[in-house]
Structures are given as C-alpha cells and as structure tokens.
Length: 456
Image (tube, rainbow, N blue to C red; front, side):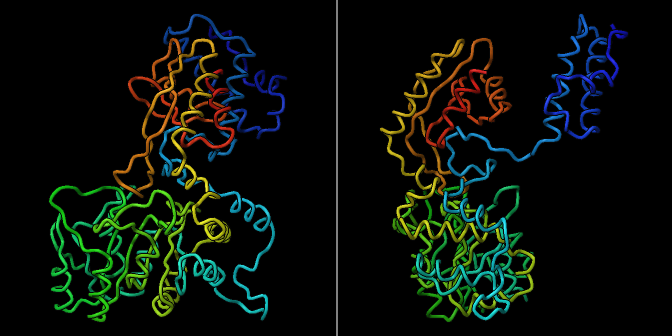
C-alpha cells in the first residue's frame, strides 16, 4: 500500500487543479505533501484499507491549498439571533457606509486637509458637524474603540494621578478578560472607588468630592445587570452635583444609543439612556462605541464640550489610538443615516432590533418549508428569543422565530460544525439537541445560503 502512494510531482501536475493551478507553487506543494503524509500515517496505523485514487488526493490537496492561500476573514451568515455578535464583527455596516468606502477610499481624500485653505487640519473636524446635528454635542473625538477612548480621555484629563471617582458597582470586566479598572489605572489616573458592589448613593460621591476629587466617571454595565437590593445614582443627579462642585463629569455609556433608536435600555430611574440624555444632564464628555447600538464601524467616540475635547484631542496618546480613513468614512455615513431617518431604518442592526414578530414568523415558515424539502433534513418552525448582544443591553431578550434543524445521521454538534465549514459559513446555535437558525439576524440572501449549505 505504501508503494501505491503517488509522488508529490504527480499531484502537482494533475489537470484537476484547474483554475487553482495559479496558486503559489509552495502552497500547492505543501498541501500535496500534507495529504500524502496523512494517508501514509493512516496506512501505518491500520485505519485505511486502501490508498485513495489520485484524483481524490488531488481534490483534498486542492481544498487544503485554497484554505491556505485564501482570505482568512470571510463573509459568514449570522444565524445565532445575537444581533451584535462580537465574534462575528458586531454591527453589519449600512449601505451608505459601504458606498462611502467603495467610492472614496479607493482614491485620495481630504482626511487631514482643509480644501478651502489647502492647509493641514484635524481628521476629526469634518465629523463634528454631523455629530452636532444628530446628538447636539459641541465637538467629537474618535479613537479606535471605546476602551481606547477611555484610556485617551483619562490620560488627558487625569493622567498626572488625579483622582477619578467611580462606583464599585460599575468596575466592569469587558471582553478578552480586560478589566476597566486596569485600563483606567494604566492611563495614570488614580481611582477613587465609592459605594458598595450593589448600592451606591449620592452621598458617596459627595464625600469623594469633599475629599478633593474633581473628576467623576459613570460607567455603563455593558455586559451584566444588577437586580434585587440595588441602588445607583442617575446621570442627572451626578450632573447637578458636579455642576455645583465644579467637578468634571465623564460618562462611559458604552453602547451609544441615540434618542429614537430601537432597543434603548432604561436607567436607574426608568428613563431611556442615550448619548443626548447624558449630554443634557451635564456630562462634559460621553464615551460610546461605534459598532454597538450605533450600528457603524468599530470606534470609540467621545462627544462633549469643546474645552474638554480640545485637551483630549491634543494629548500625545491621541496619535496612538486615532482611527484611519476607512473608519471615519463609515462613521460619518452611519451618522448621516441616523440623521436621514432617526428610527434607524437605514442601519441593519437597528432594523434587526425593531423587526416585527409576525414578519419574523413568516420568514421562518418560508425557510422551514424550503429546508423540509431537502433529503434527510427535518425542519420545524419554532418560537425563540434573540438578544442584542455586544455588551449593549444586558438582560434584554427579543421574541423571535427560527427553524430547528436535524440532519439524518449527524448529531447537532456535527451539523453545526459542517455548516461552519460550508462555502458560505453558517454560524448557528444549538438548542434541545437541534441546530437552530434564528431568522432575526439573517440578512438579504442569507436564507439561500442556509438552504445551499444544508443541501450540500
């Protein structure tokens, strides 16, 4: 059997490579060697009764070479029902953002040039007008994510060891095991923790300011909720206190909900949280993500008063965390989409949040009927629950509909794995030992991809 293994050159010269013969020779050679080595190992272990034919070995080598040489970031279908899925890139971009990148980023742009004077200016300046119209801020500064925005703001405002007052109940751990207190302390700020884990009162902040602190920071609990015997101080109460004491109020809102956006959460007093509300309450700087509820690219946005943001923008850390033109183009287009339609109808993530339950059921029934016609596939339309995800609205679920799928001869785990390896990868979830396709997070054309993947 070992003598029946083909030479590597035989695989490389085989006509079945077709269009993939243009792949780098080194990639095709290594893929061919790996396939032959795997067969040799199987023969020696006794797990293979005969050597596969040459065309089968070429097919395996070709598939391996395609994976090696192909792009590693690919388009996937989100069938999980998690709208802002961090592992899947969070918010899909609006059509306007994609158009801006396609039509402008392929050439040169006035990223840091004032076209009227011909002189260099700030890359943030052109965003300020749009943000001002949508949320009413005086100025805006953009970093590459919200954690970077927090680090930048505190470096500029408290980096010399100034005290920053923060509730113990708001010292969150964000994705990747990064803890907000560690990021804040790395900026050079000195944290002054107040209150208890579950209850913080206005008097706790008052005592900290009486002790000499001049910066207060409120942090949104992005990825967990507190229930039961709890107490937190509203942004309005903190705004009034800081105004009275001459202190600076920063609000890490995280999610970036706008006034009329769907899916807005409720604060301690039951009122809807939003960037506009925090600014109206007296926060001199509100920090939030571009790729969460805002529905844009990954970015850390700081909106607020000109005097505070000028200090932030001129700090040396700004150079380390500034975004590039792709982010700024997409971000400006995202804000223009909110301006044109404050309900968020022009943004995929906002549309998913507000989708009608009857429409979701109709989509699930249509997909279920198509899947039921496939040989060996059992499909049942079932009610389910989606979630905003992305550390945005902890504890919130949205009624949805999906299709529970079983494939003859395959476990749910094996079916889910096979879907992830499809030509158009499908990422779903498993419930009750069945693969569940939640239709809330399917975009245009995704249902066709699901049918094709299960058919294959």
